[in-house]
Length: 429
Ligand SMILES: Cc1ncc(COP(=O)(O)O)c(C=O)c1O
Image (cartoon, rainbow, N blue to C red):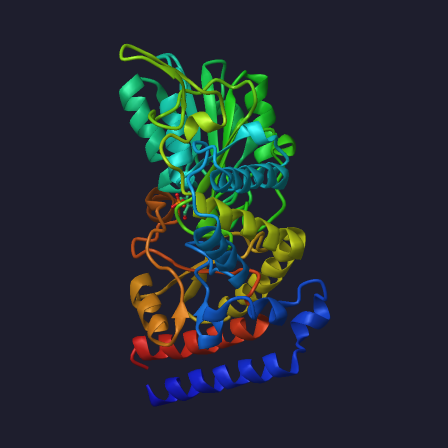
């Protein structure tokens, strides 16, 4: 344990040294992303923590906290209700973010609704389509529970069939399998853009084209793609898209539901803020996008999401993505060399997500031991039990290291040194 602590401190000192001279291999190889400059925006990183759990939630830059504080301290009023100037300023700030989100995903403002998170967005769609018993919904075996349970539950309520396209163990999906599953009764195809376990990118565009040929709707779970790569709903060809602010430098409690113009969808909740007219006997609702925002929305969260989008757009998501893949490639190269470690997913990483299993040691034990050394990774089934247990066959779960724009090559080196030492201790060698 003494050796481990010494190693941890030397790693921290090295990181501080590298930060002070502000030059690294990373910057020489990838001059586009000034990682050491970016790290200064995230105060939590100065504690020396190795934060590799970005697929669960990202850290927050100062700029986002400042934008939220500015709303709370200087512009605090409800939106869409008051007619006094403060309330109008708050409403304008909120609606500006809607326009910003629309631009971010290549949509129109009227197609963007603010919801609580990706999970809520998908639930809204699952409960909002006019289903018939004869319909079927096609999902994949890669899905997070949030893009699986809503369809299973709706199928129980409305009587439609759920069909599953199984991925290969490397996370790839075959278009032939989609072609077999989708038919004229398919009402909707729901798939993740990026797997939260394997980091693979699904062939969304091709699947959407196939679905459209059969008259089906397409929902894309963009929880793991919107924070990391440029997105465009027109290019993807989807009717619905969902993502969460907390995974993309924004605050928890706010997410986005994109609904293509012209697509019919019933709101899941009604109440204040969505009323065009009401009597004691009946009511008339407002149009999209506000119709999905019943009650007071998470205004400060929306403001924070706007600041997060500004932040990421200024840096450039193309560069963020390239940076993460480069780090994941390095991580994978090093992981496969460690005896008893099985690295999952494709040989060539497509995003910054890497999952692995260790012979004879559960994923929780590994993550707990790493946690004690200041390394944050997630273990277990990652809200994707059918994928991890049934497709990958990992009964003890898997360890997931997920990288983001502020992670560095040196952190990958440190992670590997600490992991090797932790495994040696856990195996009692
Ligand atoms: C692919 C995917 N979909 C959906 C979700 C659910 O996101 P949230 O918890 O923000 O609703 C996650 C969260 O990890 C995810 O990775």
